[in-house]
Length: 547
Image: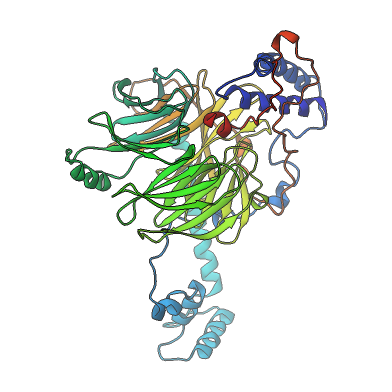
């Protein structure tokens, strides 16, 4: 497949090895060759063109592009349950309702369609009739121009945005998860600790120890559910709680003000993902390394349901209203309805396998939005799954196939995707406007490391605050554009990310899927060989965390 492709593959595998919790001598030796491989790759890329996929989106770009407006609608929560008697009328498509409204009152549906066609053919409008087609086209063009002008203004404001970054020092291993609560940031690490940080002063507020395995996931229940638990525990109504999941098979509930664990749930499996569902009395949904999804009551902390939902480890759990979304390392995505019952509250609505999503082989992160789910899966693209139909599209998040997308997040009208370049080690955050996923800008700071997790909030003045975790825990703070403070974050634009969304059905096949093993024709010196005959493990982020 050519030396360039081979080097790119080795670098991707080295990056996965680097975040393992324990390394064999052979793996340490392979990691030590990263700088050498990057240097060789740079030489080959400068020496001349090779037949290798370089820039994402070239080739069949015109064939693959489609209207962005049709891909991500504005966020809509699932509709409430409709009584059977009303189901038919409320389920009527918008187009049919429009036709019915166009006819004069009291006319039959057939007459309505005749009147509508007559008006359209003669380009005229009558009282109670439909707009002429030319008028509709003019109106749509006007709306499009207005939307383009609004986007241009938004893009210009982001190009002038100023940010500063601050590192939070305290963890001695990779930060795997972060959440934001008021002026506090809570982080979980492979070092088995949960730390609470005071953002205004960038200082460690509390160190929450108690887990015996690496922390894999965090979730913050809304204030109203915190108050309910606080009353049960005879704590202050202002108490806030945090949920943490770990490879030690436990979910712990922490009271932030008190700084103590108030409840520990043993799940019998390494917890790899969790989320709080604010429906009914509240539920904790967990995912395990074996693919099991479990539901727990927030009121009693008893298990409500256990389902063998996925073939491999659950890597992400998210909620949207009464819906729960789960993703796994084999690439599967499931959509569940929470029926708010004491027993078996989750009912499966849809399941799409890795053959549909083409996202298998690593950590799959998801972020739901209406009837779509945004997927980050360790490649140069963000994928979008229409979970009702199973149709797929993808959004370019890196200009080269050596790019890696580890997390995706939505905040204040923005779609934010992490971006890491295996070839040179550069890391950035790419910003897209919602709902149409149009590229705005990229933000990076000096010596930025690979971003594995992300959380966001806004201040009272509307400024953005973000926190990213990985090898470093960093707070990104937006500064007033008119102020004298100088930021250390670089804001830039990569025009190669301006391409529109691509339909999976029309796009070219992605690069060959890398195997989990490290393919290297270089002999490992004896001093770096291990004596055991243990089979080399997968380099996926998920399996690294739960070891």
